[in-house]
Image (cartoon, rainbow, N blue to C red; front, side, top):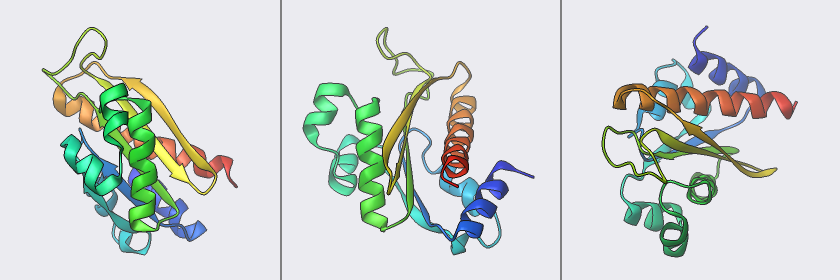
Length: 158
């Protein structure tokens, strides 16, 4: 069974809703989730917040968070997830922000650095990842990690 099918089954069984806030993946996570027939039962929608201004305007990421920590940071990922959960009034919101490459990286924040945030009624958490593939591979890795992250939290909150 595909990861997106497993995720859908878990969400459907638990009667939970999901929304996504994506930056570097450009809608790929939402696309994968909606590849599953019947996903409208649990998937509410998503925001592709590629530019910082969109993160601020739609997801309520404070400008100060971006200037102090950067768009690619655990702080930004967590606020993106919280803002997404608030915007969609969903049970679970996941965010992805990172540097897909091949350019855009620095010594401090190299290409492949990605943060995934997750907001539930229990709170907000994030994980840091570092991918080492092509732009497409980094995006795919981020989407897979986001779905695995949601599944791991669902399994802990039985």
